[in-house]
Amino acid sequence: MRDRAGSTLRVPVAASSMIAAMHTSSAAFKISTRGKGTYEITRQVADAVEASGVANGTVTVFVRHTSCSLVIMENADPSARRDLEKFFERLVPEDTPWFEHTAEGADDSTSHIRAVLTRSSEVIPIADGRVQLGTWQGIFLFEHRRASHQREIALSTIGS
Image (cartoon, rainbow, N blue to C red; front, side, top):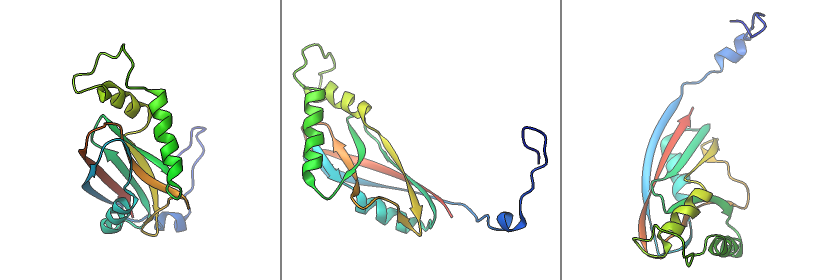
């Protein structure tokens, strides 16, 4: 094998013998929301990672909807999440008169915009069979609709 300059690359024997077989796993779960707000899903993700058998790798967490999102946020003090929710209420207010996409109510277009401004997926490292979140980090579904919804979360783990 050669690098871009044409020099021969040498792979130490010890490094090549450390390559482990890769394993993948998929899972899904549902979460019921009671309207706008953040709903912690850290435990469900951690349980799925444990069940996957992946010791070291990554888990991709994906929400299968366009009017809610995922965030990694402080999980110790709920006021941090309330501040986030208030911020989005001001950033994308429902009473904006020029929004056209309102077939399902005043929160229709705003929920899609809020979802675009956040994320539909998160990739989290796994080490020793555990998600590697920081001390105060939690994984949250961020519901942007006023009404209750049943939301589906898809997970994909890869690693050894």
